Amino acid sequence: MARTYAEAVRNGTAAASKLLRRLDWQAKLEVEPGAVDVFAIIADLDLPLMLRPLKGLLGAFLNAPTPGILVTTQRPLSIQRFPAAHELGHCVMDHAPSLDDEDQILRRAPQAQDARTGFQETEADAFAVSLMMPRWLIHAHCARQGWRVAELERPGHVYQLSVRIGASYEATVWTLERYHLITAERRASLLQARPRTLKAALLEDFSPPSYHGDVWLLTEKDRGGRIDGSRADLFVIKLPELGAAGYLWDFDALAESGFSIVRDTRLALDEEGVGGPNIRRVVATPHAEARGVMHLEQRRPWLAAPPPLSVLSLPFDLTGPEEAGLSRAERRQRLAAA
Ligand SMILES: [Zn+2]
Image (tube, rainbow, N blue to C red; front, top):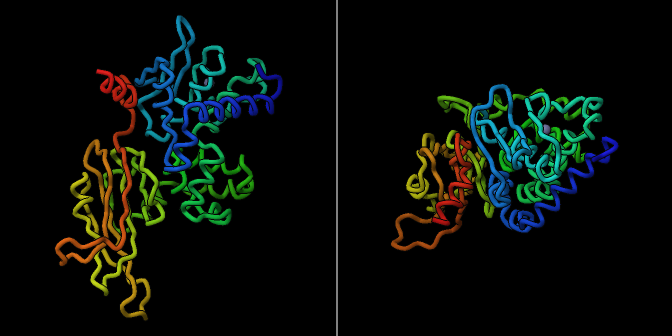
């Protein structure tokens, strides 16, 4: 039990870091950056987890007769992961039972009230932040995308970071401030931006039936990464294409791996240059419950077995959000064991 707020933050952070190392998530994500699968960690630890609609609550931790976690089904995946990580924190740190609503989890519990219970809400929150958004994971994504600190001051870049680490835009902004990557003033201005507006700007003239899903902007810099998202997510893929030299990106494989292409345009990279590369921009929507590998090749289509000039291959899982019953990770575990 922590005696001070600062001690609680240290305890939560240390417990999450230890768990990520012990379960090899750090080693895995440093090679193939994506999101920490909180639900897979809960399944690996064999902790009872129940997903169901929870009136007014995001999650709960119960410890009698045995420890167990409840997470709401009434939120998108990026919000479901945070209470799942927070409740896992309660469990790992042997806390008292906790019923967590939005105020408790996302807006931080009042310190005076939390102090009476040994800062257990602060500990669980610090655990959740460090489990889902460890500093090294943010660095790994930024290194891959070529983002420096200046880029983290721009809402569009922070939104793309949030989508890749599987957290909400708001939680990502707060975490960047916690790691001193942005100032409090910048945090306040980033929080003015609305994710819906950022999504609409990326989609340009395409209007989806809803903006519940995330919009991923994929480029060649995503090579080697992975996509962990939801069936409502949308993809804007922008790739340089050497059209003048006869090279074209082949999007048939994208369609075969479970996506519909709803926009396909070529943008001139340089008005003056003749024969230089152009940008191919495609907007794709996944079929329901898609899971597999997104594989794209740029080659000369008229050659019989042409060697590709460039390849973009990305494993994806768009089966989220978590629905009532067992988590996706636990269902897969049981299937594999059967
Ligand atoms: Zn709690």
